[in-house]
Image (cartoon, rainbow, N blue to C red):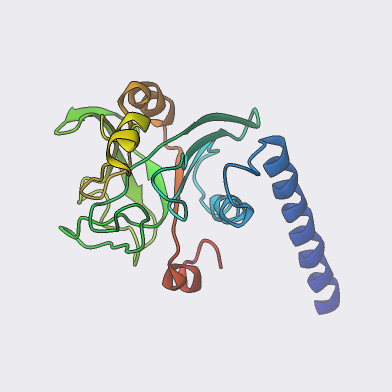
Length: 210
């Protein structure tokens, strides 16, 4: 019995990894996102229960801010809908985010899996969408910290050309202003957001990717 169960899980694992690899190719992500980041995003997303989530946003902070690293994927249609720039927290680093926190007033980005709020709002940063962190040790304070997706003029190619790096936030993922409303409206129905970064502690302790 145990032997049969073992082989069942092996077959299930190989099938899941095969479908993930195929989707990665279908989305033409090879030059946009490291496969390991995408694999973790898909693996963790499969563990989030309660709704049939259609949209997956991957924020890849393993890449420098001078490169696009905000990807919105339509899992139903298997399409990459948006691929653009995104800012990280000012205390996470300058060009590359290397420090992450779940603490209030850290002004650092948080890692892990989130779901988006159902209702956008207009606040301090204009049209915004709150993120609800799902991982206790890594992003559970996101909602209370007002970590939101919002638009910003400093999250643009022009800012990079002028300054040599992307502008930074107090911890929010800020995207180009002209994209913020359509992206927020698309994601404002409990979609999944995965923020990846080079943090060994997260890889060791996250229940979503282990």
